[in-house]
Length: 345
View 1 (cartoon, rainbow, N blue to C red):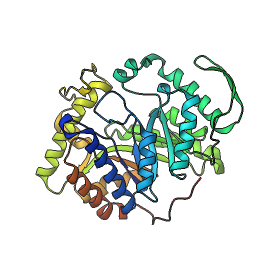
View 2: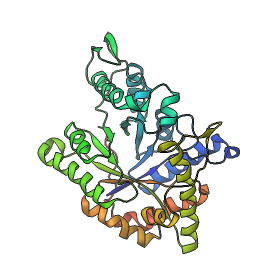
View 3: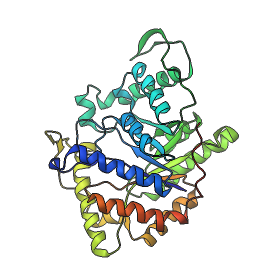
View 4: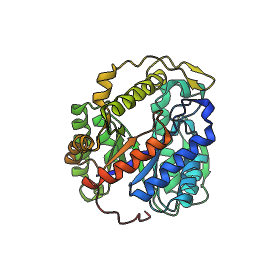
């Protein structure tokens, strides 16, 4: 089982400065590369200070220039917000600049606040996403492409530059049956068990494995990635402080994910978190290194290929860098195979 650090660029204090936020994220990427993490992952979000990354492909090329082996995953880019005729070329250039280390994770968008303000209502995101994905795949795999759909109509065209390799794509999906069908289509899968819901996780893994078994050799290379909020704490007091920080983070996250979407000048208003503090603490991976090993062991037994660790939820940057290093030294050796380098696809 491999591990990725999510460079989610949380920005709870505007006075900290956005330039410094991205410097912090780059430090995390460089350290992850040095310590043997399999990947770093980048979100796409606009107009808000939580998970703040409006240009993930741009940041991917910056990371590639400062690292040598770590994969760079978009986790995820929101296809309905882009014109695929333009975006396909940007993906090819990013793949070239990252020297084949890019894995393109895609999704439909989850925050009504940003989607509505960018002109894509939540009730149409699924249909837009489905067509956008079909157009993107066509543009990346065929030379002359024309289209006559609900959202795209265009005469034959060819994106330039041409792809130099197959660009691996990962689908963000939670529904177990959706995981099955996306795997059958040849996508890597990223999912989450919703605050540690174990039965949902079993169903998600089951959908993925069922598809791979039916695909036989054609699905052998496909991977299942799990995303979790995580951090290491050496003492009960440290753990409590980090759980409280995560609780505040979810008070902002839920505001734009499931809540009213109250945002003041780009800053998400912190509302009371709907999940009680103790319950949230039990569901998140915030614990000592040995407890982390114990909590991750069932994932390894289920055959999860990669765990994305979201370590950015309002904590001190040096504390987070220390946790990334501690995790690599004390937890990863129990799960990770020796690093053999990244081969371009």
